[in-house]
Every structure is written in C-alpha cells, then in structure tokens.
Amino acid sequence: MKKYPLKSDGVLKNYDYLWRMSPDRWAWEYLRRNREFQRDAAHIGDSQISERVACHNIRILKPRQTQSLAERWGLLMLPDLHANGINADAIWSPSVFPDQVEVNVTPRAETETCNIFERTMAVCKVTHFTDQIGREFLLLRGKGCVIQVRCFGLSLLSMEDVRMKLILPDFDTYDRKIKAQQEAMRVFGDDPTAETPLWTKTTQILRDGVIALDCLELDMSRRDIAVVLYGLERVEAEWSDPKRAMKDAVKYIVNKAESLRDGGYLVELLGAQLGPDQLAA
Image 1 (cartoon, rainbow, N blue to C red):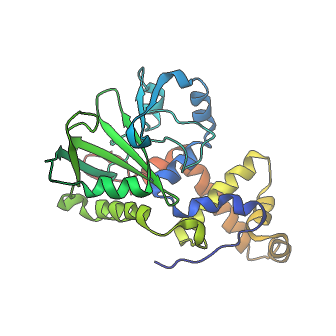
Image 2 (image 1 turned 60 degrees about the vertical axis):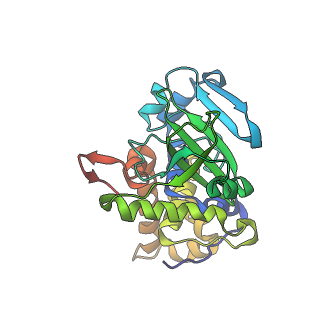
C-alpha cells in the first residue's frame, strides 16, 4: 500500500498524531465530534468509573453502574470527550468491534514465561477494564498506537500466575483478524516521533475529514476548509475552475466525514455486523 507525507504546517500539524491510529481509534475521533453523543457524555461523571493503579503501574478501570448511554454508541464506558484517539479510554463492545485482538489467559508454571506480557510491559502503558458482566479488556498504548485486546480464560486479576497467547482466527474471519493482529504489532515498532508521518489514501481522507468537521464547528465555509487543507495560493488558483475538481473533493470529504460522525463509524471503521454473517466492512 502506497504511503506518502502530507502538507503539515500551521494548524495541520495538530493532526499529525492521527497517522498511526488503527480504525477503532479513528472511530472514536469521529464519534466524539457527534453533538448528540456529546450531550449524552455530558451527563456522565467521573464517579461512574472506579479507577486504581496496580503493580507495573497498570490502570484498573471498572464501572460502578450500568453504562447504557455508552452501549447506545457501541462503547463499554464513556471516555473523556476531550481526550483524543490515543489518550481516550475508548473501549468498544465486541458486538460492534468483532475483529479486535484476542488472547487466551491460561495458568503459568513457575518455569514458564509470558512473552506477550514481557514485551508489552517494556514498551506500553497498560489499562485493564472489566465490564459489568465480567469481560476483561486491555488498552495498550505505545509508539503512537493504541490496541484494544479482549481477554478470554482466566482473569488477569486473579492471584494465580498466568500467561497469554494470541487466539488464532477461524477461516471465516482469518483475513480480517490477522490484519488486526498485524496492526497491533506496530506498537513494538519504531518511535513515531523520529519519523515523518506517512499516510495512505484512506488515512488521508480520514484525517481531512476530521479537520473538516472541526472547521465546520467553527462555522467555516467549504472554501475555508479547502484553504486549511491545501493552502490559500492553491485555492485561489483552483477553486473557481469550471471542472470543480477542488470543490468536488471538499464536498466528498465533508459528506464522508459527516456520515462517519453520525453513525457510519460503526460499520465502516469498526466492522459492525449488519445481520447474521453479514459484515459492513
């Protein structure tokens, strides 16, 4: 897949953090710009979630009450609206995010080690979340990436020594889940601050869409959006072109962004099910 740098000066530099994000983090970036979601999130206080810190500086989160508002949007809890895709504790329900990385937790003998744990703790900040029906999830943050992991088997909070192993997908979901596992491996890669952000066609559209939504929130016109994305000189040269290439490009970006923000993130970014054995993405 071809990757390339983008214009990244002025306000555009504020969006460089997006370049290494996985689709589920993009989903949060779009959802948190949804006004109806913002109204729901405004009713939630910090007291709804219990938080403590365990050994290895692992954050332990657990809801104190039902999270019905969060579930309405596909989340297991409502994160801080102001937190971006890297910092937000956005944990998606398996029903809307079926291709998340999965591990099986089993007993560990005294002579055994857990490579997943050792490698993860060396490079990641770890958040552990238990939902109200006892399902356990991890958010692993490192190298500009965030990975959501669902845990099966023994509880990671038990007193027993445990080890984790990746769960291999079945034939029907193999390609999608292997892709998710490959995305997760980026957390063990190079430091993104030492790299020039590189974008694909898809991530460029997603980035430009987030920027467009922020511009619309400031009551900026589509021409104003084009100036932010492409620069004033280029807009003055191309905006009035009879072929409408730039106008059509901005129209597409805005329409796509609004669609993702208003619910499309569920099927296009998370791969939520439309019905039995039918995936939207």
